Length: 231
Image (cartoon, rainbow, N blue to C red):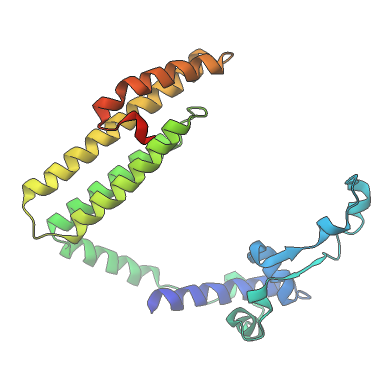
């Protein structure tokens, strides 16, 4: 597929750039830099119980470790690409995509996009951005609120997916789903704002802030359509 080929081209480009910047590098060096999760570090095994930084720093280089199981396989495609990649700086490489051509594709897509599909994408994007904005709010530690946010994401995924997948239903069904989602979003938004406000007003009394929030949360549960036993 196009996406798979593009990922391969990007990987080869990164390998070529890495080789150009590090002429003596080997495949293991690239993996440690590009995909740390595929490098199993053994340094922790060499540090004594006291964990002396001075002693451990002496063995920082060469690095102690090994490739992950999947990268150690001689049939791994990454190793084959590494052997084929030529050392070439990114500035001298052929562009992976033609910006003019890709821009024309985007404009053509927007020009031929049916209005209802455009609206669907705008609605989905707006809800996701708004939810991410709320999720980044510093509201302290609250298991109830964390569960509420997770449930909001699950509800968004379910309702918005159904809205995009089925276009055979009536407009009223779609509006009803969006209305329910908006109500769910409103509840979570109010809870986050309250928790953040309490955290700001009582910075030295986190237990008091949590107690106030917990009482308000339990009071609001019936209005949210959720019983207290479900949490």
